[in-house]
Image (cartoon, rainbow, N blue to C red; front, side, top):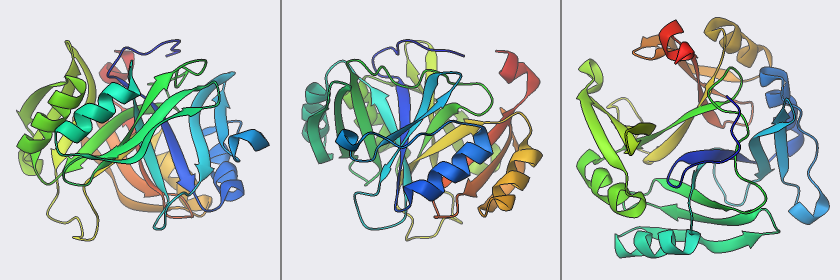
Length: 259
């Protein structure tokens, strides 16, 4: 759906930090049909992907060593207020609140277990203009080593509620709530996850055809790490781009897609 404004506390933007912007633009434009023009020099090479004239995701140069990563941004009324709450509750700031030209104000934090997340205080740039439809951002999910401690931290930082349900072999699954609305998810670290992989926020993109999407990922030089596999909302796969940035693609079940 098309979005013009996000409610405070709702994840509403994502971007990729990558060592090869040209290769990333080529991969994701071919995979999702996005238009990704090079960013202006004053933006430090930061590019904004577009679909139907609306922003879908950002692309920037890697700022830290290590593998490229997709980042989740929670839309907030005040990045400075969130920075204080993060510090008061045992988190840390990687990037203190800062203005990004006239687009808005951002900051990057880590929760007490090391999962990195960002916030965006909009000015002229509200966030993603299309979400929850094929070839767009649809969900973010915390993979954590301590579900209860995470509930406490994010509840105090963002005011999120948490609805935890039994998820069979996965143990539990939690949906983060803003009011009655589910805005993100959380699951305990799977035992098969390598120890060197830290707690993290994972990103999901909706696709119309999961088999076509995973085949396209491989055709473009990426990799399929897991799936496709059936889950309650639909069929998902964990994949990676050619530079190693992991993300999830999900084909929603008809009833979820209609909702």
